[in-house]
Amino acid sequence: MPTPEVLIFGAGAVGAFYGSRLAVAGAPVSAVCRSNYAAVKESGFSITSPQFGSYDWRPTRVFSSAADAVAAGVHWSFIVVTTKALPDVSDDSALLEGLVGPGTAIVLVQNGLGVEEPYRQRFPHAAILSAVTVISAAQPSPGHIAHNRWTRINIGPFLPDLESADDKEEESHAATSQAREFAQLLVSGGVTDASAYSHRKLQQVRWHKIAINASFNPSSVLSNGTSNRAMAEDAEMSEHVRGVMEEVLTTAPKVLGAPFPAEFASAETILNSTRKNVSGSRPSMWADWEAGRPMEVEAILGNPIRLARAKGLEMPRMQTLYALIKMAQANRDQLRKSQSRL
Ligand SMILES: NC(=O)c1ccc[n+]([C@@H]2O[C@H](COP(=O)([O-])OP(=O)(O)OC[C@H]3O[C@@H](n4cnc5c(N)ncnc54)[C@H](OP(=O)(O)O)[C@@H]3O)[C@@H](O)[C@H]2O)c1
Image (cartoon, rainbow, N blue to C red; front, side):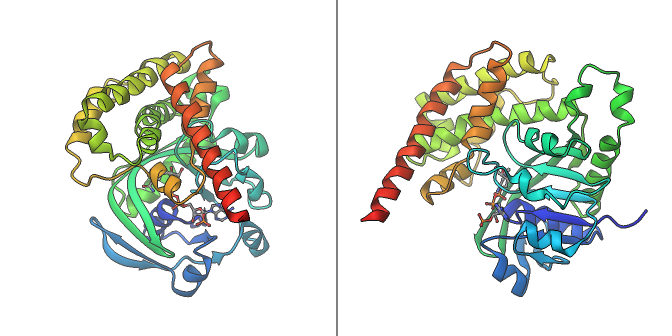
């Protein structure tokens, strides 16, 4: 089999970390950068990790934009999308026009729900792979990636049309073997907890992660930067966070038509492990809020609410958080705009 060419689209914290591990596995890995383009073109990435130590990674090719990558004329086996999921800001699927060839798999490593749909609609013949990662990583300065902890990533084919079909149809689908190939590449690169899941299980993982992200992330912003641990330790905040998580965890099985696997953590287990969190870290939504950047509000709150509503289900706690955080963001942006005019 020829070595798969991999393109990381949006090489920030997550993209550069997993890209560097795919490169360790022996794949030629190229990167589309934006604000970090000059630094990465000049010196590549330097990565620090408690697990892998300090190392440098120079992508095979560094592009300043998707259009720049199109001009290179490479056939990509995997295009790994690791931009923030901001459907209210930009439809990033449009930027992949000209990059997706026969047999290309688009791998979406993004938080939230509904992130696959724009890619499926634009590229109906491409394999869409959906991936959920549990990792803590950041890019404190251009080209410097701090991997803090965890590496777990699950990858599954996105095959909503086969939801009620025979399992054999999913098993024989090209996207299923591409998901396995991608997971295997990561394992070869040292990410030993990378694994391939079925379409259904991957969507269950996405919903389960929403329980965590949709409860802690906006609550941190709306309470002026509370850490996850402090939220889990405070009597009222933990009741609030638990309520949101339980709302998501009881609604998701109804939307997906199947109960969560028994091994998925309950709200109580998540709260208990957050109380043991020594780092006192805050969710990345807080960092985006503070920096004046758009937050992943639609992917993390709006889309789950809409998917539930499409099945006649309301999530009032989620709806409250969504309304408040969305308006807070609009007010912040309005204030910044008027201040910049002064
Ligand atoms: N970081 C974590 O620990 C973590 C953990 C779990 C899940 N996630 C999820 O993983 C996804 C990626 O997060 P992240 O933390 O890696 O974000 P990030 O560090 O902000 O990386 C995103 C990168 O994409 C670039 N980008 C955006 N639009 C682009 C475009 N049109 N062309 C080229 N580059 C573009 C950004 O460039 P600019 O710098 O110019 O904006 C940035 O370098 C998100 O959905 C996040 O929720 C992150």
